[in-house]
Length: 175
Image (cartoon, rainbow, N blue to C red):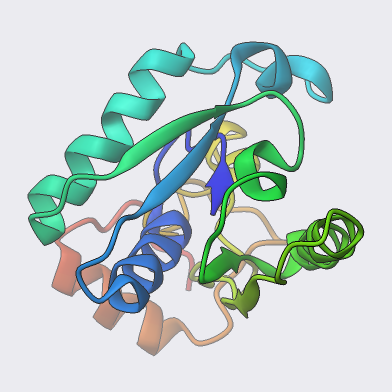
């Protein structure tokens, strides 16, 4: 799997949990976008590559007790065209990239990588948790709404309040 991972949110954590579960004690490699790539398509502020890679390594060690290898991604494919992997764990929006990786691997005489697509984690309003939404101030890293907006009202206010009370992070009463 690969990404920018800034900020690290519950959607990323679901992907990382899947990676850990599939690894069965084997090596885990996680691609982290280079600083150049992280800024290529968006005008945004992100932590430097080294800090983001260290955050991933620290999270995986603290959460699962495993050491992972992080590699710097300078393009969409990273090391997947040259190295052998059992799985590539992706989110729905990167599925076509995974298909292209396997197409390019086949052209190079390599075995395809099994693609594992992990659904998005939904925020309280039913939309996907994303770094873009977090950076815009709509939600926090757990998908809790930070400000009332008629377009981001939770789908089920009772469920929303139960979730926020459990996390002790009631930010705004939207209902």
